[in-house]
Image (cartoon, rainbow, N blue to C red; front, side):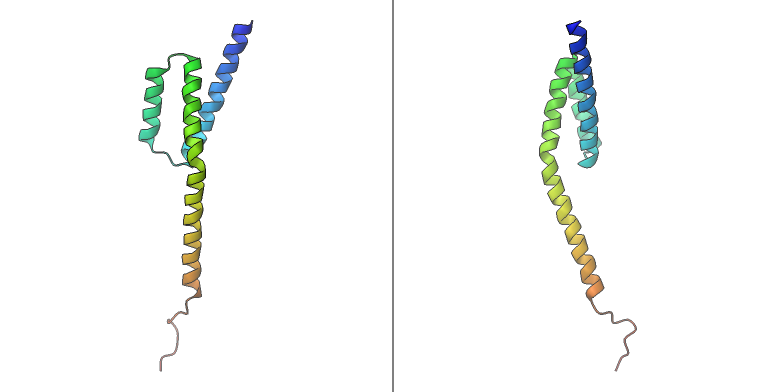
Length: 100
């Protein structure tokens, strides 16, 4: 039955999108309020699986677009932290130095 096969394919696609969005929410440290807002809108606007797949697809694209920005910010913060740590370790310590 083509209809059953299509439904199974949509259900599988929906599951994959849900899992991908969960990973993106975790990676992007998305606030719970934003996640809840999306899920509420999903329940209100998408009673059918095909509509849910479309909305999850849109959310995935939106989050995926944010990922390179987040990675750049994270990389910048990492480098800043490393430079600060190196700066602290390269400074001569006045502790334990004999005073004249």
